[in-house]
Amino acid sequence: MLKDMYYPDGKSLHKLVVGQSGSGKSYFIEETVKAFLKGMKDPDFRMVYFSPKNEGFIDMLDKKQKPVHDVGGMLRQIEKHRVVVFYPDATGLEETMDDTINALFDLKDSNPDFKVSLIIDDSQVFLSSRKRASDAFTRLALLGRSRNINAVYVSHAVVLNKSLEGQIDQMAFFTLPAKAHWKQTEERFGFNPEPYMEQLRAVDYSFLYVDIRSGMVQPMNPIGA
Ligand SMILES: Nc1ncnc2c1ncn2[C@@H]1O[C@H](COP(=O)(O)OP(=O)(O)OP(=O)(O)O)[C@@H](O)[C@H]1O
Ligand SMILES: [Mg+2]
Image (cartoon, rainbow, N blue to C red; front, side):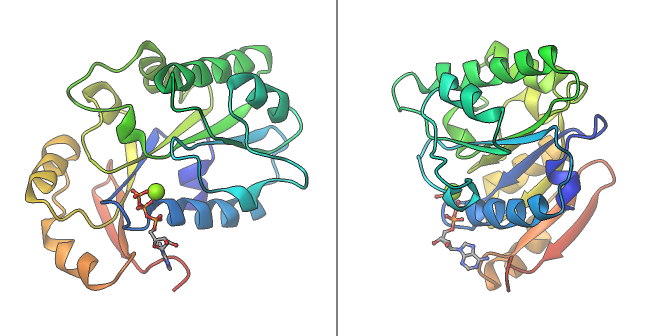
């Protein structure tokens, strides 16, 4: 599961981690990335954690490394460091997100071996069904797989945007109690979480691991439990 989530192998599509606020998404990301990186030996692999809330992932940094606040900072660090933690300014946030995506494509163009997982926490800030995806997000959705640029969207809502939803093949589904969300999950991803909701609510931070393509749903215990 860790490799499927985080390693861009040129075959798998993007990932969605979804659940209400406080359900354990960011904790899940942080702990699973730690475990994933332990076994990750590919020198061309990089990870960018993009956090609109400007929190998390500090443990993942090398000694003396600090979070970056702009794309220039990311480009300076990404050469030497396996993980870059991006805490963007709130002003111009959407533009910074787009510039980040485009900068990763440029890196790939100049280095064919480059592979990256881009984790976008609180991505509901950018993505909603009411708004058209930016050109950069569309590029990520359509070309990310073949360019080894893997996106992990972390969100409060299953509804991202039509063009992106079609590009998701795995989902970690945390508690999401509103019925409207279950219906949307079924409509958009062909998976109805309703039968599992009681179970999810009974154990804090538990989640479902869903393979959208095969329809496999696996109830999981909380990370670290
Ligand atoms: N598996 C776990 N075991 C123990 N504590 C956990 C676990 N998962 C989450 N927590 C704790 O629960 C709190 C909320 O978790 P987290 O920040 O991951 O939620 P979230 O889903 O990212 O929320 P938001 O959408 O608001 O960002 C945190 O204090 C976190 O440390
Ligand atoms: Mg969070």
